Image (tube, rainbow, N blue to C red; front, side, top):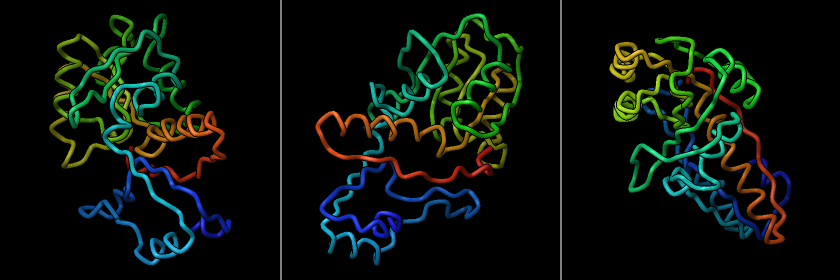
Length: 217
């Protein structure tokens, strides 16, 4: 918000996936709401804010899961994992590869080091990968993958802590490797895709870069 104001912009719109800041370093209060002073300055500049959280997670051309899967080079994408009335997860094919190569692909896509909890074989079983961007390390997601006989989950927040201990235990017991790329980085592909969406209507658009939190890993 500050960078937009510093640019002197007015009569525009800030498109967001999350209307608040995610920061595990502030646990247990990991979400920080917008600054009211900055909101007032947005109002003075006639800058609207459009937050599109759950709908942008739902399987579709611009969704967090699909855009991340495409960045990894996955093909034959299919939805899974119910979330907020939609399907936030993506199943995709990655033939002739292993989890080490998948980690390399994710690091190349996000531009930084990622974290692999290798709980199973290095081989990607059945040539399919499960993808749930952001905070996808959840028991219901892992149960679905175990039922589908898929042994790799790509997500954002992969850290092993008190909150995720049960999910990690399930993943370990069912030999499902977990590959994390941070909340911000794995979900940023969707907002970058939305820049192209707005531009096709002749609307000047730009992605405002943020910083990944490696505490997510």
